[in-house]
Structure formats: C-alpha cells, structure tokens
Image (cartoon, rainbow, N blue to C red; front, top):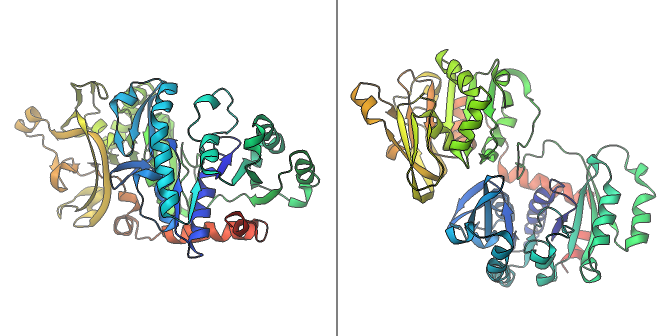
Length: 477
C-alpha cells in the first residue's frame, strides 16, 4: 500500500509505477483505491472509476473495472459531491452525511478488495490524503482501515520539495497507533532536487526514532508523462521547441477530465496555457472549454471573470474554439434543468443548441468518425476515425426556433456527438479523449506523442533504479 503524508505527495504515480514494476515480473497485478475524490473519471465495464485507477490498471496489464475503485466522489460544490458506487451514481448515498455514508459503503469496499486479493498475485493499494487525519480516523475507509484489513505492507511517501519532509514523516508515524505503525515498511522521499548526500544524517536519525528505513530518494521528474490525479497538472506555460500554436484551456473551478490534455504537453511547438482571466487568452490560437462537473456553476464563474466576453471576441475574430462535454453545453444557447441535476443558465450563444439535463447519466465508450465536410480550423479532422468516451447528464439538440430561422449547427458526428458552427471555427463535442487519440493528434498537429506503454515502462525503470536494491521484491514475498 502506498500512503502519503499529504495530498500531492506522489501516491498515484508511485502506485502506477509499482503496478508496472511487478507486472513486468510476470505477476498478475491489480490496483485498488477504496475511495477516490476526483472529477477525473474514465469509463470501464460497469460504469466509471477514477482516472488514476484506470491508468494503474493499464500499467498492471489488467482490465480496468469498478472493484478497483469502488467509491468515487465527484465534487460539484465545496460541500457536495456526487457519489458513484461500483461505477454507478447512487442518489441515496449522495444525500447522506459523510460519516453515515462511510459505514454504509465499507462492506462494499472490503468485498471488492477481498475479491481482487483472491484473483491477483499482487494488489497495489493507494491511500488518500494522509493516514494521520485523526479527525477522520473513526470513519476511515480508505487509509489504515484498508491497510489493517489487508495486512498490507505500507510505504509512506512525502514531497520533499515542499520542505519539512522529515517532520511530515515523523509526525505521521507518531500519530498512528502502534498496530498501524507496524505496517509501515519504508519511507520514500519524492521530488528531491540536489545532492542526496546532503540528506545525511536525517534518514538514519529518522530510522532510529521510528524503526522505519528510508528506502528511496526519488529525484524531481517533471516530464514523466503520467497525468496528475487532481487539479491543473502543470500550471506553468511551456512548450517543446519553437512555439507554433498556443492553446488556452479554461481552468474553471469544477473542471473535469483534464487528464485528457496531457498529450498536448508533449506535442512539439504547442504552448499550453491554463486560463483563469481574459488576459490569459491573449495570443491564444485555440481556446478549449473542457468538461465540467457543474456546468451552470462554472459558467457563472466564467462570466464573473469576464471570460465569456473574451471567448466570444476570440470566436468573432475567427479563432478556434473547442468545447468538450460541459464545454459543449456552455457553447449553446441555454441549459435547461427540470430535475435539479445541474442548474438552469443562459449559454455563451456560440452554437445554436440547447442542453437539457436528464436524471439518467450517459456513461459509455464510443468509436466514431468525423464528417467529411469539416471546415475551418477543424478541417483536418474531416473523415478521421476516433475513439473516446462519454460521461454526461445533459442531452443536446438544435435550438428549434433558431433552426427555423436559418441558424443551424451542423452535426459533424453521428447521434448528436459533435456540432460545428456555420463559420467552422467553433466545434463542440461530447466525446472525451479526442486529444489522446493518435489519429486526431496526427491530423491536427502532424505529431505523435509517447505511448502510455512507454510512459508506464519509464515509471517502472525509475523506481527500479532509485529504490534500495532488492527492497521492492522483498516487499511482496
């Protein structure tokens, strides 16, 4: 089990690396995270799970499934999350308070973990936040309760780049009861910059205090290629080589599925900017409105920042605009909510469409093809076959009155999956994963990016190099 002293310490990517490390030894490996709080989700058989567990399963060579992340919390507001249990939205659990919910779902968590342990040689478990959140320990279902249930051999990872790493490690250890301390087999220093010899004598002092050795010092690695689990994964604008195209992604508060933009970081000549103000759109060739877990709320935020006018002005100049899922819904004329799913709101009016929110959620994989008559900046996608996934409550259609008046959005994928405006510069689609699809990347940029398999192998090589020799193999004996 991989635990962390804080959120963002490196649990997700280290779990992914260990999944590939052990799988390369011919072992049957599965990931597990009891409860994930994230708006980054992927479609699997039976519904949806957190993106981190999806990638971990791929790294392990396993088929991603809902037991690997039995509980997914998708934040819609600061004090409210949609609850997904075994892949499906559960309205009853969504309405319950946190502590009552934990008691209800623990049997499902335990059953899922036990089933994976019975079917696989190795299960690599990811914790959440910190295991020493003593205010939450009585209702814990994701950290030490899981560790105790599985008698897991635990690693505790900390982000040394933040400072205070040894205090974080010692403080976490000190707040755990003795039976939980006994499960800690190693400390891991992550994101280290500098000469590792300067760390002495701290690792030995820490071991003298705790009995737990420091088993790895992992150097800072910005470009490992794996999307971060939560938040904007790289808040610094950057590009590889001479900038030929600047792409601004609107970073609203409830942004979802942002991991699908990871490949853009590796496209030569692309500068990726996360936009929170009109000034951030200056010089942008493309503006992307990504998915949102609360479309009406993010649309209101967008207006408060003045980004609505900036996006409209960009489109009026002929600039390329791409809306994905919630972003597509925002590009239309109106959001209509008769069931209290998301909220009513006027749209940006860049596509003559109307979205109505339905109780039933659409969650599915899709393989489809763009129309042959794509125009404008998106003409390169004409006839291109792509694969992706849908996760949305809204259903989007032509605005009837506007269509009768001659203002019609052109459907450019079957089944209302994608629409383009008459000028051709505004494209909205429900299909997540467009910018991960090799055919789409080749058509739009004439480029290929490292495959996930190469990324996973690189992670496994990395931990194999930087952990104490023999430690990882001894950990599973």
